[in-house]
Image (tube, rainbow, N blue to C red; front, side, top):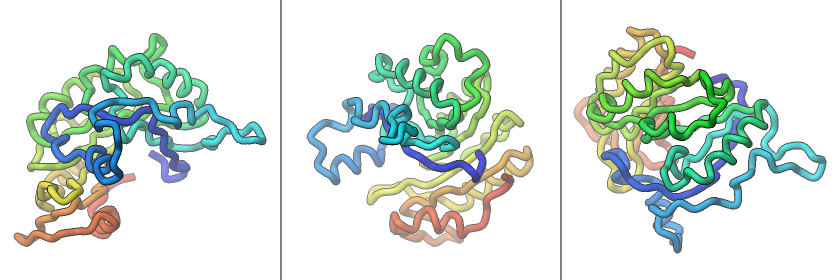
Length: 246
């Protein structure tokens, strides 16, 4: 992912069902509770931003400018079953906006082939797909599926990282980046910095870029647990200085 991209956010729907251990303290549920949402967090609903990629300003230019990296569906899962009826319209917008790149994460990589459009082929060149894993069991289950899929740009997101994970057998030149992070929120499970360094070494050994993107609320380092406020979790991860590669 180029550092030259302009970041943009697009959440065509909101709400998601929990499917694995990493979902236990989902930030979407927590934020909905915080802001008093009247609709249950497990209920998927289209948002007012559904057609944001093709919305235009008064001068007829797109509201999302060309060259944007569009973080897609971050308050749900793009492959969510409840959104099957809406997704084809999203693919049509993604096709129209070839001048942008769209990036989504999923815990439902097993549904990928039934969710892509008929013209997907070897993958759209403006779509980046991240497969999310949180523990060894989910890595062993999801990453072999991910490896076999026709996707031009692939990343692995180890978050929330709730145990030491070995993904060395799943790293190859087809993976553009591995990113890891801890869990946020008052009930967050601790992240041990040794797990981060172990994952980093796996990436260095295979030449895959690595990024430590978030400490989480509770970070264990040198045997001591640190409590880190949400506003510092990304900056503290960056200050650790353990990123590798592009």
